[in-house]
Length: 246
Length: 373
Image (cartoon, rainbow over all chains, first blue to last red; front, side, top):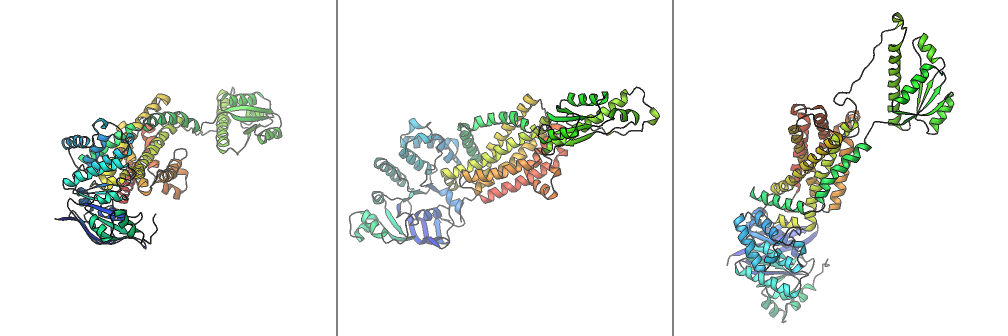
C-alpha cells in the first residue's frame, strides 16, 4: 500500500505554546484513520496543517505526494475538507451548493449534473433539491456537507468532528456514507469524540497534550490496555493530560 | 475563468435572495436624494433684519422696501434708535441691524454719496456672512438704480465708476441642488460599495464558509474578483437609479457624456470596493468591519468637498484628501455633470482614483491569506 499522508516530526507552535509536537505517522490509501484526543489536544491544529490551511513550524509532511510547505495549492486539488463549523451556504439550495462547490473545483456543467443526480440519489434528497440548506435538519446538512466535500473525487477527505450534535441514527447513516467513500478508494481522516465511531476506524491515533500518545487498530489498542472498549483506552490516556481542556 | 463564472453565479443568487438588499438598493437613493439636498442648502432665507431709520425720507423707505422685497429678509424691527435695534439683535430677534443715518437722502442728492451702517450678529456664522453679503449687494443695486433714475444727474460731477459684476458660470443661479445632488450621488455609491463588499466577505468568515473556500484550489485574485464584480454591478445600478431620480426631482441632466461619467464611476467603484475588501481582510466580525468602514467613510464624505471647498483647507489637509478616492470622484461628478467636462479634463482625477484603487486591491489580495502562518 502506498501511504497518502506521511508526516515526520510535524510541529506547530503559537508563541511558546506547542499545539502539535513532532507528529509522525502515515496513513494508507483507502484507510479510515481516526484522529482522537480531548478538546485542546491539538487535533484541529494538526488537521489544518495537513489541509494546507496552516503553515507548520517545523517537521515534514506530504499529502498525496505534495509538500505541505510549498505545494499547498496542489494539495487542495487532491483533498476534501469538512470543518467543525457547518460549511455550506445556507442561503443556497441543496443543488446550488453542490453545483457551486463542484464548479470551483473545475467540473463542467455535464459532470455537475451527473454528480448532483448521483449525490441526491445517494442521500435520498431528490425531493429537497430546491430546498434552502438553512431549512434542512442538522443531520441532513451534515450528510450533505460530507457528500459535497467529496463531490470532486478527492484522494483524501479530512473530517473535523463531522457528527457533532447529530442523533445516533443519523450518525450511523453518516458512517455508511464514509464506508461507501472508503470502498471507492477515498482515504478518510476523521476526528471524533464518539468512541463507538472510533471502533469503525481501521486505525486510530490518540493525541494527548499535542503529542500522539497511541496509534494502532482499535482491537490492538484494546488488547494493549486490557479492556473491551475504546472508552477505557481513551480515558486511560487522556486523563494523563496536563494541559487544560478548552 | 470558468471558476469565476461559478463564483459570480453564486454571489448573484445570494444577493437576489437577500430580502434586505434589493429594497435598500431601490429605496435608499430616493430617500437620500429627496432629503439630503434640503439639509445641504446654503441659500439662506428669512434673515431677520432690524432697521434704524434716522432719515425717514423717500430714499430710506425705498431702500427698506427693496430689502424686504428681495425675499431674503424679514423686517423684524423698525425703530429710530440704534440701541433699540442692537437689543433686538441681542435678544436674537434680529440677525442684522441696518442703520440709515440722518440726512441720508440729502447727502445722496447733494454730495452724491451716503453711508449706511450694518451691524451683524456673527454667532450664526453662515447666516450672518451671507446676510451681510446679500444686504451689501442690495444696497449697491439700490445705489445704481437711483443713479439711472436720477432726473437731473450732473453728468460732469459724476465720477466714473467701476462695478464688479460677478456671474456664476456652470451654475448661473447658484442653485445648491445642482451643486449638492451630484455629491450625494457619490456618497450613496460610496457607502454601498465599501460596506457591502466588506460585510460580504466577513459574513463568509463568520459562517465558516471562507474556510471551505480556502481548502479549495481557487486562486485568491479570482475569489476577490468574484466578490468585486457583483458589487460593481450593484453600484452601477444604484448610480443609474440615482441619476434618474436627480433628473426626475431636480431636472439635473449631466452636461457631459454619460460614457465619461460611467467610465469614471467604474474606476471609482474599483477603488472603493478595494477599500471594502481590504477592511474585510482585517476584520473577523461584521461589527469590526462596520466600525472600521464607518470611521473611514465618514472622513471620506466630510472631507472630500461635498459641503465645503477642499481648496480652502490647509495644505497638509489637502494632501491627505488627495488620497481619498471620494474627493476625486466628487470633483469629476461636478465637472462632468455641471460643466460637461470630457475625459481629457479629468485625466488627473481618473488617474489618481485608478492608482489608489490598484494599491487598495493589491493590498487586499496580498492580505487575504488562504494559508495562515
